[in-house]
Length: 98
Image (tube, rainbow, N blue to C red):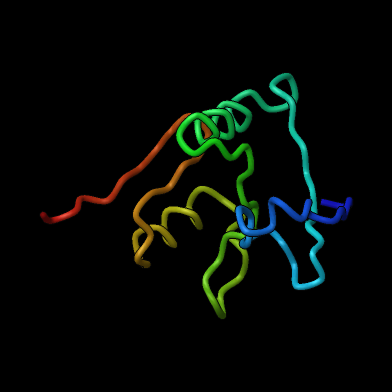
């Protein structure tokens, strides 16, 4: 995420979570060849929302170090209010009482 570009004016309302207060956004691109699973995730999100953008951020909770292993990810998932955890080809969902 080394590149910074100005978010197009007509897309700022569509992308508030990735647009900084100065109107810029850190951009990271991925091709299907580079990372097939991540590319497929972004494509599926685009199919559902018509927005081919996902927010990539650090994975940790306030006051804790950044998740650095599957064990860390599982611990964070099971001890917080996260609803889902994707890791590689796996998707974990918490049971929800209806």
